[in-house]
Image: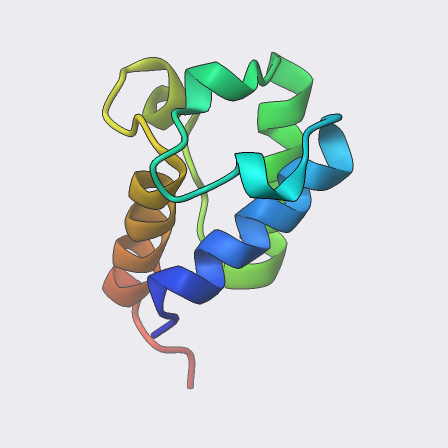
Length: 88
C-alpha cells in the first residue's frame, strides 16, 4: 500500500506540470477548487494516477465535493489502492 505522503507528492508534481503555481502553494490542505483545475487537467491527473497506482479516480470524486483538498485526494487514492485485489 502506498502512503498518502508519497501519493500527495505524486499529485503535487502532476499539478505543477499542469498549472503555473509555486510548489509551496500546494499543501495537503490546499483545496482543489483553489487550484482552478479544468476538465482537461482533471483527466490528465486521472490518467497519471491510473498509470502510477492502478486506481481509477472517477470524475464524481472531483465534482461531488467528496474530496475537497489535495490531502483528501491522496487519502482517497490510497484507500482505493488498498481495496484493490493484489495481482498474482
